[in-house]
Amino acid sequence: MAGYYILDGNNILKSIPGFLDITKGNFTRAQYTLATLASRALVHKRDDLVEVVFDGTGMDYKFRPPQNVRVTFSKDKTADEVIIGQIKRAQDLWVRGRGFEEIVVVSDDREIRECARIFGARILRTKEFSEKIFPQSRKKAHPHFPGHTNEKIISPACQERITRELEKHFGIKRRQATFYGE
Image (cartoon, rainbow, N blue to C red; front, top):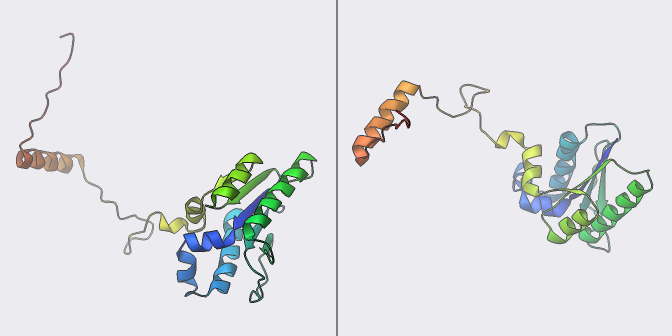
């Protein structure tokens, strides 16, 4: 069964600075970039659908959205009203047996999250969503050794020397292990 992902577009773009950085501040291109990256991160099955909802009319938006992505502009309503309407509609279809297996809403907006919770949708905060679409930002690879992180590996012997040196420096005495019953 398919998943239906409803994204609060403006909320995501304002919460994740990476989009405006990537597009050098071009908001329309940031909208398209969000739709494209969401498609790559969320669409895993042929029937999955991602709907990105933005405030406004979208007059400047001239891009064709990726496959399985619908870009919606709220026109004379707010994006929040459109998103809440979509959550309710998706739940109605599910009740009738013609809906999506899973409904996921991405937003930091409290009202939208509460509505999603009431109607049984899964909620992703924008930070969690950011980790899905920008997985490389979790850990930076070492520039000279691709695939390796910057974490240092210290041998147990070296760890012991460091511990002894710190104990001496701070005047800490080690506790002796006590074995009961001896």
